[in-house]
Length: 228
Image (cartoon, rainbow, N blue to C red; front, top):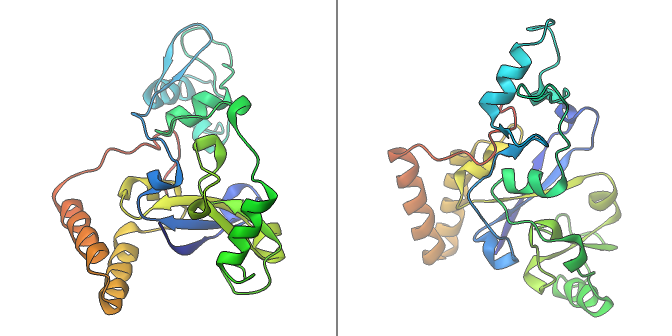
């Protein structure tokens, strides 16, 4: 279920665009498939956990002034000394998502686009301006469906000038990938908004997740990213 949109600043992305983050509740209903995060594997067979790659960085003659792999530096395998080729599927599995093979990704049809635009009366999901494009909130590479629930009509500005991401408000660790985002304040704000609207089911669910957040440390599926 689409909940709201969060704006992520883009300066930290090496001059990339800022991002729209589609805030979802139960991203699985959008087609997302979750798995246990899997570490990268080098061509030589070595398991490239974050700790292993950190050790490889620290072994460089230029350490600690070299550009860390976590900040976009090259990833040399400490076992064989080569730069491994990390493919698309490895990147996706390392994030705890089940990849969809490119051969099985289907394009959104004209009718599906029309239905999505009609759902918002021709308006951008974010700002209410005229919608010119339709994107998938959960991208197809992560299993994002072509169903109406996963389609977001956007205006020129919010399509052209932003990258697009998603995060599930019911999965706190997922917010570790969003620069500058603090899950708990946002979840609390949304809980209060839904409480005012009388949406008891979502309020109860958010209360449960907020309570669990106080009692445990969540497993982080984005260990390969630097968290600021």
